Image (cartoon, rainbow, N blue to C red; front, side):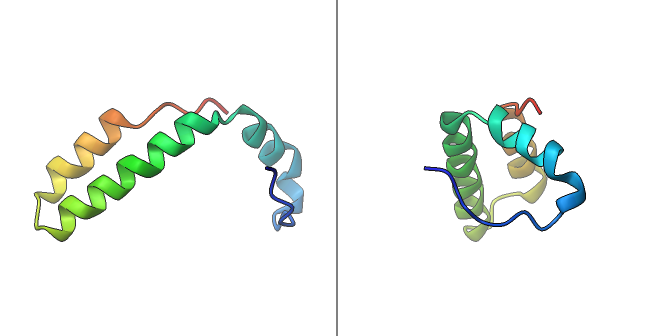
Length: 64
């Protein structure tokens, strides 16, 4: 469903609404899963640089 949270940056309302409309829900879920995976790896002392590089390569592209 849609969030009814108020927009705090009212001067950027149109830009924010355009980004919201352009986000694919499956891409957003994939991104959250990738961040959770990276967090888990870092908690187990994975290499920070390699983990972040891997995360950035795998993140879905968000077209705004």
